[in-house]
Length: 319
View 1 (cartoon, one colour):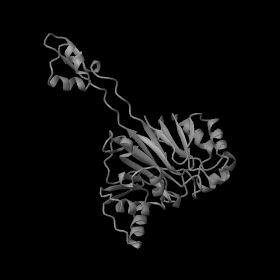
View 2 (tube, helix red, strand yellow):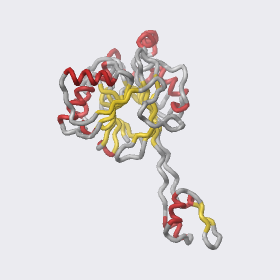
View 3 (cartoon, one colour):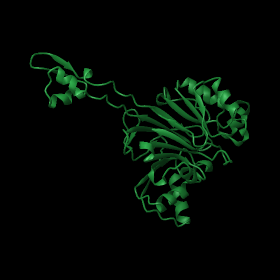
């Protein structure tokens, strides 16, 4: 999996930063998921050499314009450029009305189905089936399943964080090890592949864990919408491998950040540290910090060292 930042600016586009959009890519971009869709996102996709018709899922964090003004146009272009497969859109309440009115008023007719799901007050999408930990499952075509959960944030309007847990990958089974111990090929291999034990006719016990490599633990990451720091952070936000979070204001603008429902760099750094995240990527940078962006990074780095400041077309491999 790879993250490709298409827009990393806050509020308005600038010559160096477009407004919010982030791609999660599978299978070298043959399938992509899009997080937010600010104005000009489809042009950024084209500049990055991506194909809009490869987008299968869109996750909208909130309905402020710098996160959604590009969405109707992108849906139209997807249809005009040959996209025929269904598209899933997840978002806060109101996203269905926004798209419905935008497409109807402009008489835009799509050649594919759009499945729109709005989050409920309990943080769940009503059509999804949730496990006991509160996650539902999404199935990329060429990647192992991902568990997803949305959680409400603290912004001036309804805003969401999307938490993704990559499912663990079983270790590779080595049949030659079983054969060397006298296990005949057949149904017993299936038991060993599960990591279970079998008993041979001579009484010898063979442990399947000795026949397989160590499982590959899935990565856990979260894409945050705009937000103030949370008073309570649920367990599934702790110990993440990666957090992507806004960095709209420096610490000396804390009153303005509080008034506008945003976070300062220091607040984000303290949050990442308290959640014991492995890595933090900052985005959603205000134009007020043009030519001063390194100060934002230094301010965060002094509190949480494992931090990166994203720029348009920055790529990060999740592995």
